[in-house]
Length: 219
Image (cartoon, rainbow, N blue to C red):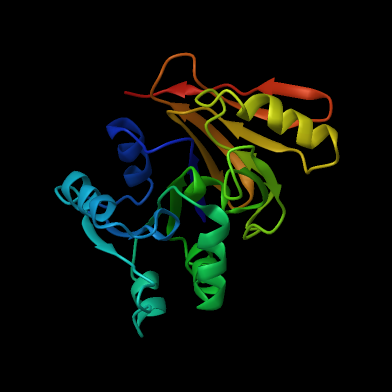
């Protein structure tokens, strides 16, 4: 039951890392662009970049989701969730029961992956700009993974101080993810941190401070 949470849109090295988890030469991939408002440009970019190496389809919730959405989801090898507004995305998923289908897919060993909103949605809580650039702590993530998460830790200057401030104020401790970094969970256990950029990593963040995790450099 792998989950791979990435700081930002993955480059080729990180995409290959996710694909290899499926053990398929050409995996079936479902792209979920809900957080980014399902823009045509974002969907086209995924088809162009991943279409040569995967059988890609995209799920849309507007004007309404497909009747066979659950069945399509469970046929996939990878679910890739894009960035954008996490709170809006989760609200839409829950209205249509997609959150329950995702848990079912996870329990059937479909690889769940995503960047930014698509990284933090799997946790119980997260640091998000869903409510404005000031960053807020959100407590109603999917809860597949315990604790909290924060992406773009080295990519946006407010992330590090704001996450620390929230945790010192009682927000759940968790993991911070630099850009160009992926953290992999098997079940709910963190098993590996990988990065495509030397010096980038992930951190355990608690009231006591932050602890850098060892990251394996991949190319």
